[in-house]
Image 1 (cartoon, one colour):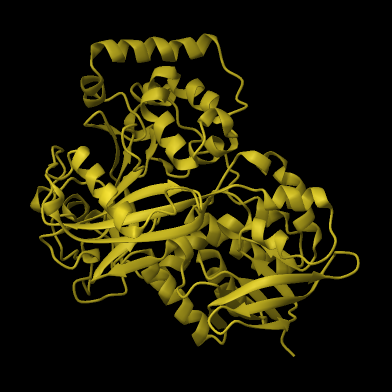
Image 2 (cartoon, helix red, strand yellow):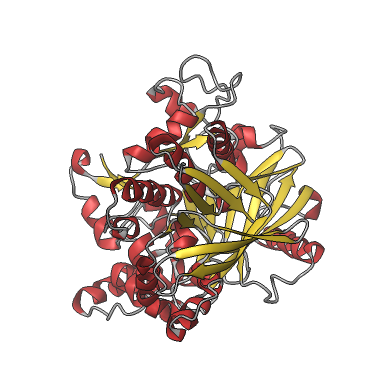
Length: 515
């Protein structure tokens, strides 16, 4: 009889794990998802025919196994020419080979990487560079102050016990206060001085002003830079995960939505899971089931809280007090935008070219603004409209989270006017609000003792933790998928689970590449 694996969570990690098990083993996966949609925070939400990418997901990876899976599901039709890449924003036919994406849905597009910081009504490069535009926007006095502030870090390094010092050591205090402090506090809800530097080590890694200065004097052929293009599914990230879910079902796997794990029973020595209780959230019925393997991408907080056995109370306390940040996106379909494209990048209807924009203005609560037209023009039903996503960070049941949809949306529109992105509320045609729980595992509070929880989870022989929330680590989408692949390898080859936790521990910036 074939063995069975319970996979908790139908996001990138869970669906990838199910597919890899079906391809490489005789283990039958059963995926349970407590929501009524798949893809987790990598879903694509659809509103009145317009599509929203929840959080923005660039398809870029340094791992060939992951990219091979992407292109197995959504092929890139031929290799794009240089002219294709240069003009792809204005040329909606996207002819990269035959057939072209105008006529075929299941394809991957090539997109330009454009993200900037919006500060004091001006655009700055992200990450911060020493471009002429940056110096012009900052002005002579602030540029000098930033330079001296950075030089000060060369003579007096701060102890990198927190994220604030991590940033100051790499960019100087002036640039930190301008371009990092406000956004970081919006994202996490606490000041960067209260956050572990581990988050910076993961997300910023090798980036610094020193590197930007050195880059000015390097030969271009040897220069290390950020990616200039990335891949993107025609209809957003959810497009790929819908294809992946269909493959799982075709190969004999099960995917069950509206199913929530509520209890975990361990054996007497707490070394194996013997059974679990699963709740059907629609009809409120529960059932007890047993599997050979348990693979979890659910938040560690909820996973440990579900264990019915008596376990070390310190472990339970650390886990259940782990902090998270939740996510709210206001989707606004615009008839007009006040802000115009002042770059040399050609765009349709002179639209700003950014995929997303980091908002450093302390006078507004919005943290980031996405322009869905620039992720893929097929995300927006009407070519003459602009669909933007205003992203806010909250904590479940706080003041922002508990606001009514109508009040929250109206405040967001007011902020868009204040930022000079639109002329008035009359520029808004349609509006919608989505809330996403536990979008960001946070690096403060009880997280400093998280390694004790990790070791406890590793000690449960038939439990594997994968994905962003499954490891309480700010994994990118490709990292989450890779944890699933490493899990299948560990099961297949009967080796240590440590390799699953080693994903995304490299010390270079994820989107950095050699030219």
